[in-house]
Length: 402
Image (cartoon, rainbow, N blue to C red):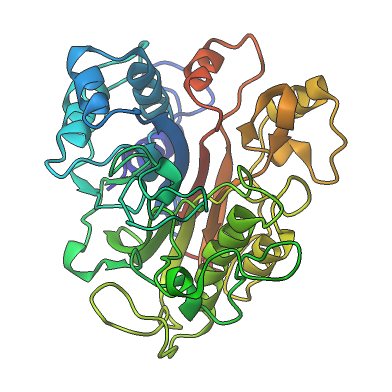
């Protein structure tokens, strides 16, 4: 059970036992027999931590010798204490050495005066970033560059994903769509030259994987029952040319989730083990990740994120916000159509701030609270957020009230 649940119960009992006066003869207010217990809640979070390294094994080496960025990230996790969290851009290694080091030497050690936290369960797996394709994917005449990997990266596992949980993860039931072919997505947005001809040769297009990292459905047995944690990190819709190949891929990586939620019987939607179909219609879920798309602003194809936010199964009515995002956005002077207090990423004078990190629960939860951890400039905790250009998004979820 979450420590937050126990503290809430203890606080409720403590307040109920306190009368208006002090001393041994002070009256005691009894707890009403029909008083409802405090709601059981589970805190979910997502955060792009930028814990990556350009060299294979580099993150492990940094964590072994002591990494200041990792200490700041651990401090914030200790402060916010999510029960389930997705960390984007945490380099993958098959031995799980980086994840183990981060747990034992950072999360389980007090950071900046915060209490340690332990996650007994984790999920991580190979990703497409840095994985050689053997193909010339950027049409520069070479097949060995970082743009020629199935997902951009300088080594396999770069920019990986790590799920940490205080509840058991059903690892045998995890579904991965790392090998799903882009061409198999209905109405796939094939990149085109300005003259309308395909950017990729037909033989290359037939082999392209859709996911730049991976798409995972991670079932977690929480205090609220099994919750499918749907996690991904679509490619940024920039760093390309007029063919907009990254913009098209970003939109279709997001569209894959929309199909997954909308079509439980999709025979074309097959995971890496060959099981086909989307998410069961009665399954609870929380969709999480750095989706690199803002519905109102930025360079992405906004129709894809709009469709996901408008999906009938998604509760997007509650929008996490922060105190710090608005002033940060104003400092850059960009005109923004969306609510800047909901922004999660800060990309400096060149691009400003955007809302690109999301936690989207299914509609069968009650959302008790939530926010974006973006303190006002000058707050002590603001130092923890400087190690990455993203900010943590969190939600407290509970069963619906009768």
